Amino acid sequence: MTQRIRTNSSIYLAAAFAWTLLGPSGAWANQGTVIGHWGDWCESAEPQSNEAILYFGDSFTGGCQVVYYDSSGRSVPPHSDQPILNFDAWTCFDNPYSHLANDTIRSIKVGSETRLWAFKHSFNNQENSQPLRLGPGARLTTLGAFASAISAVRVVDAVMYNDTCTQNVFGSIVLYSDADQQGDCVILTPPTVAHTYPTPRSMCFHNDTASSYHNYAMREAHFYEHADYGGRHIPAATPWGNFSTFFVHNDVISSFAGFW
Image (spheres, one colour):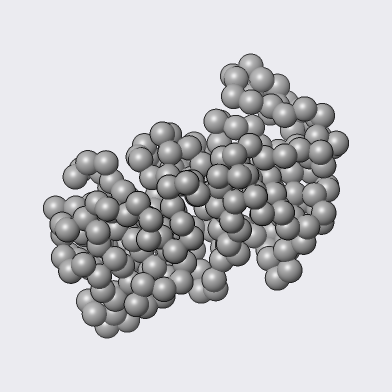
C-alpha cells in the first residue's frame, strides 16, 4: 500500500483484503479512517490536524496505524464492547477491541490540533502508571519505556481540551487517576441526562483506576463500582472529592450513569 486510504465502503473492503495478503499490521481501529499500512506511505506521511500516526519501527519506519478524534461521532469505535454516540471531544483505541497494534508501536507523529495519551494497558484493565502525553505537532522518533509497550491510546481534540482537563469543562465531570485531582484525566460530557457510560472503555478511562473527580455540572453524578452500573453506588454531589471518601480506598470505578 503506497497511498492513504479514506472512508469508503468499497475502499474499506479492498484495504481489508490487502491487510489479509500483507499480514497483520494491526488492522484498523475505526471504520471512519482505515488503519494498518506497510510500505513507503508510512515513512513519508504526515498526520492531518485531528490525527496521529503510530509507527511500528523507530524513526517513523516499519508500517503504521492512523488514529484520530471525531467529536461528532463515536467515542468508542465499532468492534468494541460498548459503542455509544456522544459529544466528547476524544476517541479511544485499544487492543483487542479496536485492533490497536499491541506492544508494537515505537514512534509517533501527532497532528497540529491533537493530543495523544498512550498507555501500557487496555482500558478495561487497571493502569497504575502515568501515560505518555504528546501535545500538538509532537514527533517522537523513539518512545523510551513506552517503545513496544503501548496497548491503548486516547486521542483528544487539542482545541477543546488542554492536557490538565481544565479547559471547556462547564457542565461536565472530570475523572483523575490520582487523589486530589491529579494524574491522568478525562472529561466526560453527557449531552443529555440519560446519556451514560456503562464500561471503562466507554469512559476512555482505565478500570479501577479513578481516585478523584471534579464535578463542573452542579448536579449529582452517579458512579458505580462495576461495569453496567453494578456494585456499590456513589452519588457524587460535591464539586470535587476523592473516591476514598466513599469507598475507604481508591481505584474502584467502572461505570458512570450520568447526572440526576
